[in-house]
Amino acid sequence: MSKKYLAERVVNLKPSGIRKFFDIVATMDDVISLGIGEPDFDTPQSILRAGIAGLKSGETHYTSNAGIYELRDAIAEYLNGRYDISYDPATEVIATVGVSEALYLAMTAIIEQGDEIIIPTPCFVSYQAEVILAGGVPVEVPNRMEDAFQPDPAKIAAAITPRTKAIFIGYPNNPTGAVASREVLIEIGKIAEKHDLVVISDEIYDQLVYGVEHICFAALPGMKERTITLGGFSKSYAMTGWRIGYAAAPAEIMAGLVRVHQYTIMSAPTVSQLAALEALRHGDEYVEEMRVKYNRRRNLIVGGLNEIGLKTVEPLGAFYAFPQITSTGMDDEAFAQALLDEERVAVVPGSAFGAGGEGFVRCSYATSHGDIEQALEHMYHFVKRYV
Image (cartoon, rainbow, N blue to C red; front, side, top):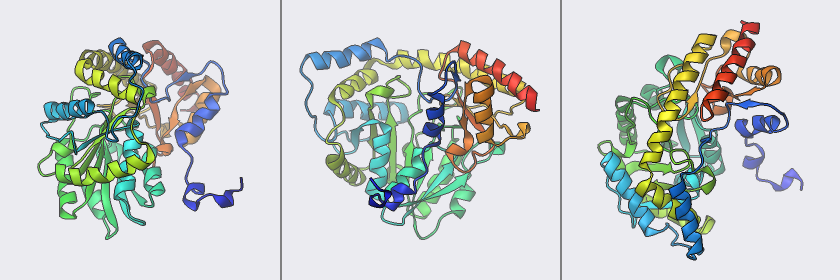
């Protein structure tokens, strides 16, 4: 098919920097991968059994558009118990096909043609793309290593124009591992209130924090009424392939998300909803077990990267380190390619994650302790050749 049949916004959409790079990795043997943002743990057995039991009992049909009520109620209970914020499961919570669909619903429901969405970067690669696909304009506000990759409220305020519709934040952050402080988020809330903006907050890594508290943006004073919270099960419960997430928002906003969802998806997979319900009811011990292991790996990789000479700010959430590689004299694309070619270690160029990512690479520590040790050894030899 000729490209002339495709929409211009699709033709001009930048390919995912993550997928592009790992298409190359897939053709190579003996690669130590620090690139995939996916838990290396299997889904816990009790969650698996809940899904299997649902299949065996004939739970293979559509659910309501918004999802099984018991799951939505459990999500509301989780948010209330963890963050002291109240949502009505009947009208303010929806089960989605991963956070990816929740992101799509939020953008499609609120964006008019030409609306601007402010996005602190570096950030996950889908954010800008979903804004563009919904007809909006992403406005990137780069964060700085010197600020530990915290979003800068002053820069966000300076980026607002009459076309600004929303501020998008994603913390704990992919790719930097930054966790936004309460003080910074309160300032962003003041900006949103002053300019009557929506805030979309991707909190998929909310349970994977180390020695700090994750702040749910919607739980800040006065913020629930203008916030769409995105969350899910892929990262904390090792359920990436189940494709199950959620969104929570005031009823008036949620009605729009549900309307888009009705015509796009119908309902999230029934078996995945049942598994997610089990995760919320009985999954805490598994999350803690995985978090402890991630924390050990985090200490290993951050210490190792800094010893090698790749300056790395301590990541306080998610499972990524974001070392600066400019000391090698290479840009991030060249560094990642050469490291892969010469040492068979895969990382993701920081520029894939938007403005502010140039000169860095993303290293995932969602892999084994042994693989991280080997990767660090290979990276040491690589850096020694160039510095």
